[in-house]
Length: 394
Image 1 (cartoon, rainbow, N blue to C red):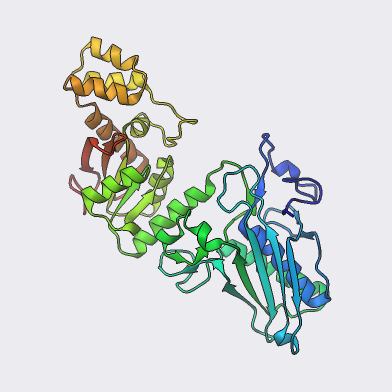
Image 2 (spheres, helix red, strand yellow; image 1 turned 90 degrees about the horizontal axis):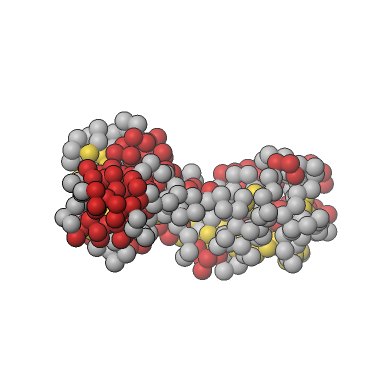
């Protein structure tokens, strides 16, 4: 049983489908939407004795998806204090390659004394915040602010409809969440024990990469809260190891930038650190040097004509420049220049640094760049430069 709507997977009831621009890829639902739906069903069952199935919720932008229940349990006890209800919904991320796709999100609701409000608990598979810098206090369950508000709103709606007080404990859990979390940023961000309950709209847009970009932002927040003055945005695990070897950075100063150079730079522009190291493969960073902020192969390409022009600035003659232009890959262009004594790697690094500084728009951040090849060998470097001076802060 999945959390598809009552009409078809990825379709939203309530006449708001125009807001979901169908591109042949199916939209899905966030863990926050699933937790809200599960809570709504569980609290309804506590007050009425019956689980609504499917259960319909209203998302922040007004869409009204309906979710089928994958699990339900009503537990009797000695009075209200001993009663609880659990409902579970399988997350359907649509066509997005989301690591939480297929996860069973459960909410267990218990009645609390009047005046208690809505109290959140982390059940098995949901993480707990252990470091400052996140939008939640240390010790809080990793249920983000928008899902919390969605849950509060729906608890209030159910209470008004069926005569409850709205004073409840909501324990959200995710089957196998601790295992899933190992494939996320959570351990590095100091969220331990499981995944986070996320989502600002309730909808997963396929390949929007919003979750990755949000993780980059939270990584910057955690680094700043820990007092880190120097962070590194790295395109992958190999460049991350090089950045650690060169600068001795701790884990919470490392940002898994992936292809999203622009996301790192724009967020650090608004939330500065003293120094940013950009580390990545030569080909990817040549795209940054050429002005691309999204380094994904499907959205930007290595411009070998641009590399040829850089090579000319480094002393290459026309024969070498022509060979660079016709090279099969950026790495081949690099090797041709290395053989001729032309420092194309350093030129790419320096130009990428200038592009990064341009995006930072005068923010007090010094930037250095490290280019590597596939084996992790440094093939180009640009020393720190920026408003804090030529050497930045270590």
